[in-house]
Amino acid sequence: MFLTPKTRAIRFLCRPEDDGVIPPPVSAKTFMPDWFRKLPAVDPEKLSTGDSGLTVKRCMPFLDAMTAGWIIRLAATVRMEISDGGKKVDTAWDFDRTLVSNHGAHQVAGNPRAPLPPCKFHNYWSIRTPPGWSCLFVQPLNRPNGIFEIISGVVDSDSYAAEIHFPFFATGADGLHIIEKGAPIAQVIPFERKALELSADIRAEREDEKKDRSRVFRNTISTDGWYRRFARSQR
Image (cartoon, rainbow, N blue to C red; front, side, top):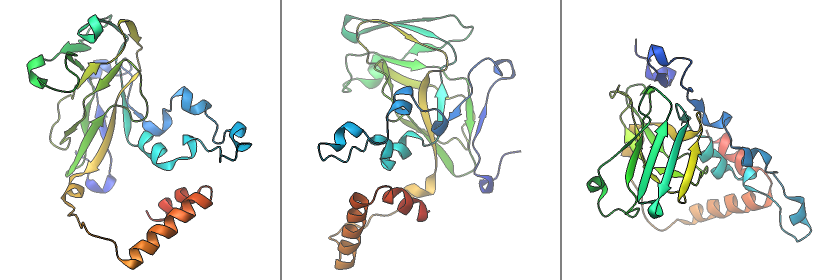
């Protein structure tokens, strides 16, 4: 039975024979990269210069983007050979399913990444959301890997029950790149489609709106952690 909108649950389903073999999706907030874990919230060396010393670890917009949704991981290790300035991409893997394939260059003719060839990661998780909900698929946010960049897309995952694959461009330097099993390849952010129906009010601000803007900005820069508490209290 499909989950109701009240539960606000997303389901990731794999074939029975893949259960326990391919890495499961994980909540983005529980899968932070090592560089971010090691980063201090405040750099003490900056304090003597008059700088606040705050790092992106205290930047809620940065962190909220990074921890939104779920991370889809690579099913098995892929060896990617990039050559001729990125114009040629060869891949290999030891797995009984296709992990990378190619798109025709004509499908994205004239795109800013040309002449890099469009490729595609194969994903073996199907994704189901409650009625009215879709999923935005993006390169894992604020997690550059220096090897590839997937192309963003939106899928109506409340009706599309098949597996969703991820087109990408190989952006790494010429040479052999090893992408390990379990590496993050896409970030999945569910959203309710009716949010896209919001209308826009575009005009100059009123005096009361100007005061609100100034108050919020001054509190943000003068009180450590104010934005985090303020934003959460509005939810």
